[in-house]
Image (cartoon, rainbow, N blue to C red; front, side):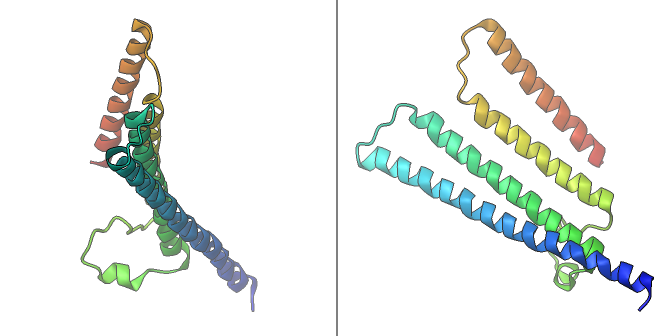
Length: 165
């Protein structure tokens, strides 16, 4: 066995990233689903069991936004897992034959980075809105900063979408 063969076989160490990214994605999907069920139980208790917490609406919206955040991070993990597999180990026959969306089809490291970066930006935006829900706006300056941050997010999303076309 020559050094080139050993070096080429060394790429299979990326299989660890594939496995653990996939497991991490599944874990995040389970946790996010639990958060949604927890929010549903809280809503049920609110309407049918006379349970009235102080910040009911903010807590429910925050919980659901947190679940969306976790779902998006799980998607990042899955995209990363599929991408690393496609790039370093081999193509996935089922994905090639599938007539569904080609979102997981990745042919280069730049394409993988681009897809992961876009989802990470969405995670950051959802996280921003989740945190902003719990702020109190006491002054006009607070509202101005809020408006400017929303404008900055919109501009960033515009240019992110424009780069895809």
